[in-house]
Image 1: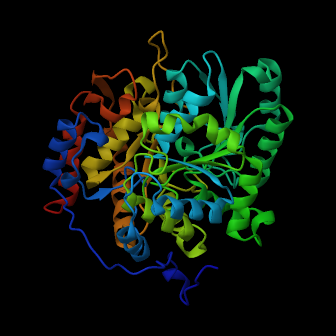
Image 2 (image 1 turned 120 degrees about the horizontal axis):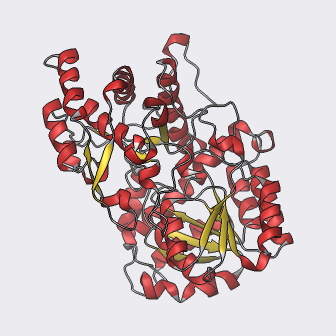
Image 3 (image 1 turned 90 degrees about the vertical axis):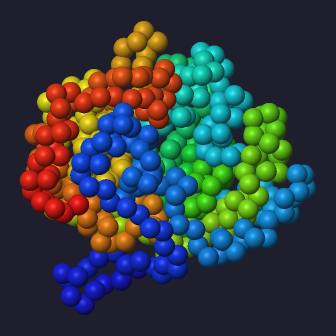
Length: 482
């Protein structure tokens, strides 16, 4: 239940924690920020943390852990095999999901590597509501393809639909019929959908997907990395879930999906990854890949202290006062920007607030990377590191052509329990200034373009010195202020 303020004008999301440790951060002068983003090849991944004021690149592995997670890490059992730490992780997975079969991996994309290696044959297709970059890369690496079946509402930047991550169920049925069930490696639901704004999927839609899969004897997989955000939205937006216990929702999903995997860098606010299932046949299919790629079956490439923190974090994912912190603060930032007239994805999803970069620079072609340009401009404007989630995050086709992104977004992730309300208001202020000066934002061109996952370490340069002009305008407007 939300906490109401006596004076409505004071209504803000309320932190359900207190801060017991701090880390100093720096805000460089505008001229230094200009220099740093250009040295990083206009790729926010290549910025150094010491040069960043607010790091909103991701919420993956950068969330503040609780005192109980830190305490749990001190009792770790570092035995190579037969570790009590692994038994505690299994007990936590059992409590949260109700599943007994557990494979550890060092993070979510390691789980995806195992899933693709075990389940995807060359020429097969995987169907999903929307792809994620590493998921797609692992599937194409082994000769598979990815087809997205997001409902049309998911690609509308702004609407009042509460579940924009839903599958298009009629299209799912048609696609299976047209391609043949034997040519579908698996159907994957991402809850919520990272690349279209962290948008949630309804419980009704997820169960409909699994029904279609079971009717056609196709493996159903749930990417549960963002599930705690998704469950918050289910509890607050879906009538069926309002009076369900959080654990009841987790268990219901595990009853219907053949396989569930997640990155604990997101779910539970720790690190590591897990693949789990109620049916041991699936974990047996994948078991051999854990020692091959990750480590032994009781640690899977994860440090045991991290595993203990993961276990405690999973228990905490059953607490509404923990899982509401991300969505409520993200919603506050999105609404603040919306009131300023800045185009953002609405309704706000989980993970972060997403700027509609295509609306910032509507005349910029996709191959000048609008979202990348806006992300670089925001670092110049405020020392804020966001993440490009547009065409730059796509992968070229085999013939060298570019598949243009459906949406050009800049993700401002909100690491849980890390930044204060004043820092979110600073973010909104600097984004508003950038929006008012959006006519100064220009395009980017490649200098170094890797062939795989180029958005991680590729380098680009500005066109026509627009970044210098942006920095000059900032200095004119803000004077001696940082």
